Image (cartoon, rainbow, N blue to C red):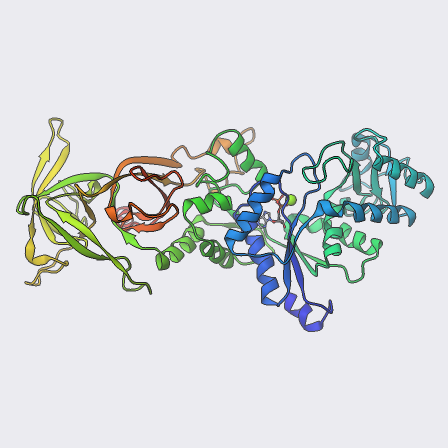
Length: 547
Ligand code: ATP
Ligand code: MG
């Protein structure tokens, strides 16, 4: 559609889009889709994209949200051509209102909210004209000016467009344009006591900025009529074209700022940047990269039909991106001690371990200490292994990643019968991971040296909700009734290789065979904290599921 407009020279100038968030909450992954779309189209067609804060409601907006939105946009990698505020347009919007009144296209209605609602009629029934609809231009102008001057209380009067109370589109039945709100605005202070409604501010702000393509979500389809009516009546030539696209809806989460605000305010999450939140701030803290989000937006694409996106689609985009960029290191989540009985006491070797596998176009390595006492993952040992379990078991030989083959000789248990230690032997000839005699092992497991590993806390995040569509709950319940109680599992006493000890906050890794992780802002030297961004695909879980 845009390409056709560019080819036909419809606007006679470069195309211009905008991203218009209301600063009443943090941006979420749905906004990211809109951002990628608006900025993407602008750059594809050598146009430009504005950031416009749609800040016309003094009750809900705040500078802290403005700052968060700017930071999130920058982090996502987009630079707006201009940063504008709808609240800077209060003056021209007021001028337009007088213009409409003078043309006989708007009037001051003095009915109360309920009377106005009833007068609007229903989908099947025409509305009725307000008794104030035929006020003279002079009277309307006088009242509008006195509304602006602060002479009336909230709700005493409203400015309405004069269109058609029998219009098949309910929105066109004399929509409200301006109302009285004796409230301080976070930017304009007390300069104004009348505020434009969304439909009035939105299209005219687009027109004032010379937007060519105004992209919005499907729920605004019916608002297109008033959008067009207003920009034409006010006198803009070649008004912007509103085009709707489907909202992003993602399984196992909610994407409504109102609901996200409740999660924060009622303490169900630790804040807007809780890594379980679908906010950009949360997703960032979780460890996803800007490219991961952009790739996801690209995959989802633009459609006119509402559909939910599967979490697997998001996680796939995140994994594919991290796979190509983050170093692999060794971390044992749930440690089980292994003693190599034939390894010299007190000896420490430094083994070279590459950061990246061969199919990743990055290189680099570090040395990891190896010694007589190690930790392996408790799950990598089974005393009585079923078929297809290829890891360590009594009498069985496996490969230690970057290290040697080891064979489990003895299982040590405590009084209660819990396995507390494995006594193994290692084969010195298998250093580097291959046996000179060509014998094979079926499993390779990760490990850390017990004396050298660093203790760390792992925050294992999972879905925030336990059902795919948290908005679809039985009558009487709400989305909070389907929160996933296991959405955060904190593991203390995990053991990570020492090479990561001095890395900066926000460093990302793949903990081999475990998942992708990022060091959290709460991390301190000696008290490392890592957030799990996403798991790896677990091949054993799949084998188990298949039986
Ligand atoms: P919410 O319902 O979460 O409050 P909103 O639409 O009110 O969202 P705005 O700040 O008005 O939030 O949104 C700014 C822009 O982002 C709008 O153009 C809006 O259409 C778009 N947007 C919001 N949510 C989504 C979504 N889930 N998918 C795609 N675009 C979205
Ligand atoms: Mg909105």
